[in-house]
Length: 297
Image (cartoon, rainbow, N blue to C red; front, top):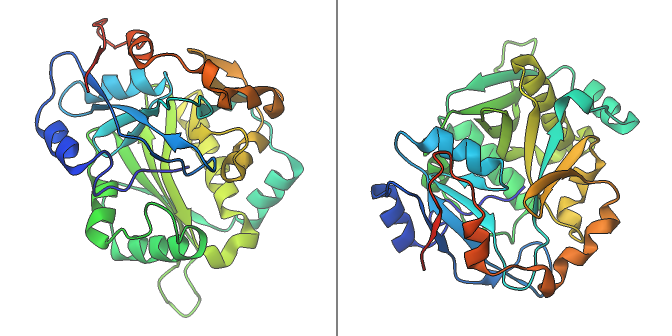
């Protein structure tokens, strides 16, 4: 799962404007093209709108059900000019059944202690975040994030969010327990959304990433919520292939949630003829109060 760098998710000017103004009917904007982090040789573009004030919860719920994701006080969805590969993915909690390897991952991490906290950044989280990036995403868009940008990523949320921490048990010698995993999680009306997660890279064989997803399925089940939102799945991207290994997976495609089925069946989404004009995409967005969405450039 990828989150835009918190310092300037859509450019400094746009971010400053969006933080301080929110029209009655949300305005939608399009970013300038940038190299795609998932498919080599392609360019990405995003459709986005502000998320703040009293309507934030309802807007986040509504647009999350339409394939949008949150980055601080912005909701965005890929809207590339010649590719339609990025599809939001979610797990149906009631129908999920773990595979043998996922059950092994759950057993390996059964000792971990889960702690759900308010969205507040700590030095221990940032230290783990830096180790994770340096080991797994040293050349990614978030590689140069400092502690202040990290704190903004965690704390700047206008919706109900939690920081789910995973700790090794307290050592017998009385030392503090060890933080090994973190997930910034939004609580939606119909599920939980994994905004961004990271974990101890030295414990790669423990499948901590898989465990975090499995545990969020349990969190959703305990709360009576039907879905776990995983972010985007991209056919043809090795970075996103792990999501297809979870059962009861749905993807948001052509304006509706459908069962993923065979991942190979979605390879054609990288063809430019599958992309609708941006004005048509915006016109189909359903707002929580029934108002029409408005594109702006």
